[in-house]
Image 1 (cartoon, one colour):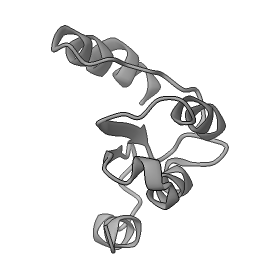
Image 2 (cartoon, helix red, strand yellow; image 1 turned 30 degrees about the vertical axis):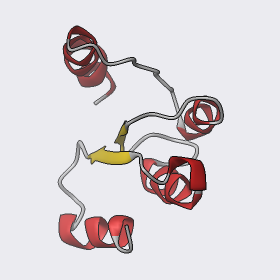
Image 3 (cartoon, helix red, strand yellow; image 1 turned 90 degrees about the horizontal axis):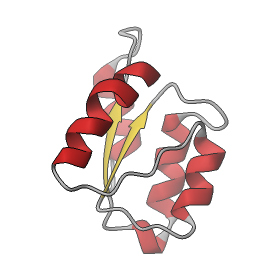
Image 4 (cartoon, rainbow, N blue to C red; image 1 turned 180 degrees about the vertical axis):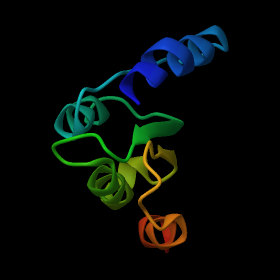
Length: 92
């Protein structure tokens, strides 16, 4: 999934004028989000430390990031997408 983001998604978004910040894991994402308020957050559910699911929950708890749209991608099909989506985005 990481190569997918780096090789395909990031160049497309940059060509559309989006400002991109890249994190290797959830902690680095939190560090970036401490000073950067994105219009939307694109995350991989499988990132480490914490995973994308925990990062999404953390973002939802931050008042400053309340308006940030979250797009979470999964590389595996082992998850029940409806259950994960409901848990991650209920109450948004």
